[in-house]
Amino acid sequence: MSSEPLENHPKLWKWRLEWLAQTGIEKLAGLLPAPFIFRIGEVIGGVAWYLLPFRQRVVLRNLRIAFHGEHDLPTLRLMARQTFRRTGANLLSALHSTHLSAERIDAIVSVENQEVLVDALTRSPGVVLLPSHMGNWEVLSRINLKFPPGHKIGAFYRPLNNPLLDARVLAQREHDGTRLFSKRDSFHHVTGFLREGGILG
Image 1 (tube, rainbow, N blue to C red):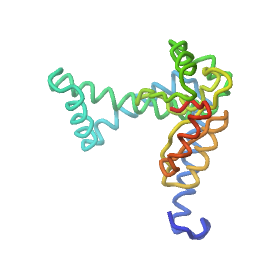
Image 2: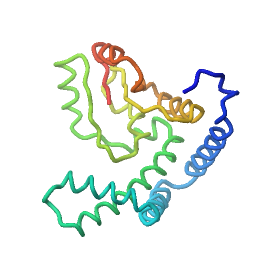
Image 3: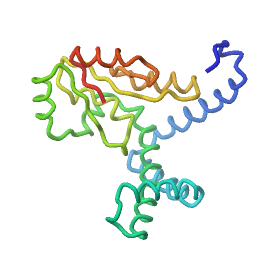
Image 4: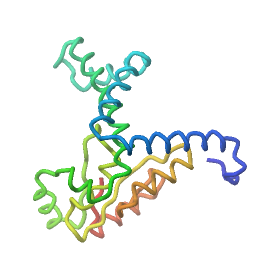
């Protein structure tokens, strides 16, 4: 991004409008029940399936690579359409969950086989976790209470192109103590975090 002051940037009004839209949708999503938000997201994702033929082809191509020879084309197309629906649901659910307290997230999220993590931490100062690609990413950065006490929690993130939104989202993700590492950060910061007993997603 340019080094010129933010208030003089030619995209400032565009960034402000995007910030307002994101904030408005987020507040609305926070007022509605989670199952309803999930269902609305599925509907939006289903509509996007018909409106974005290029993305259809990309998702279908990726599924062909991932499941080479395992499924026929109709099955892969069904999987691709379900991916659109689930992505829409995940996006709206992520906006809804930004308003949840850490205690509420702890109550609704369950983690299986926690003993595997505890065992790994006894044999190494830090641990790297690889969560699933599909899911509510905002919840994943706020499940600190699910981890063994005494260990810092960290995660990687890609900075948003809109610096106003980026600052907002970063603050939300770090609200419960998670340390966020940008792809622009030095990897020495990450390795140091792990040596100090950090748990990195």
